Image (cartoon, rainbow, N blue to C red; front, side):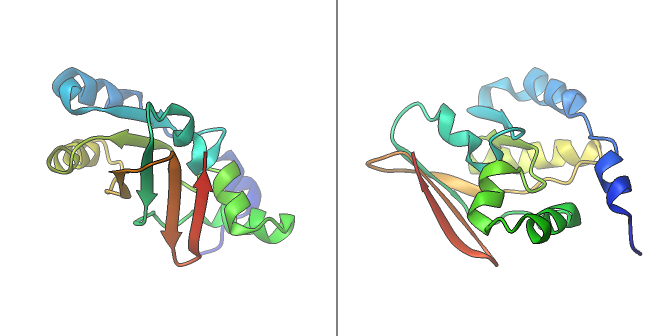
Length: 141
């Protein structure tokens, strides 16, 4: 069904505090980084890279409908949208592949949809690559 813009904007933002508490109290050692993607959108992770590395996000979740409305009405391009907005991704946890499976299972117990959205690679500079149905966007730091 259809939902009004007002209802989308006023829907409560879910708190990740209980999930973060569970993950940090049970599996602190596997968490290499954690970013709450608020201001700074999908590029916020670039601010926290400790050395040269490439973050590749190539399995992003489908953005909620509100972002399509914002884009249509603002005229912003895809690159700008992902720079400014989180596009529905509110919490990123950086960990190894095996631990990711474990952390996703913990998220499910809190009714939080989670998935592996990408990976980190060695690189000669700090860089973020977003890939999806929109194409490919590269953000040098």
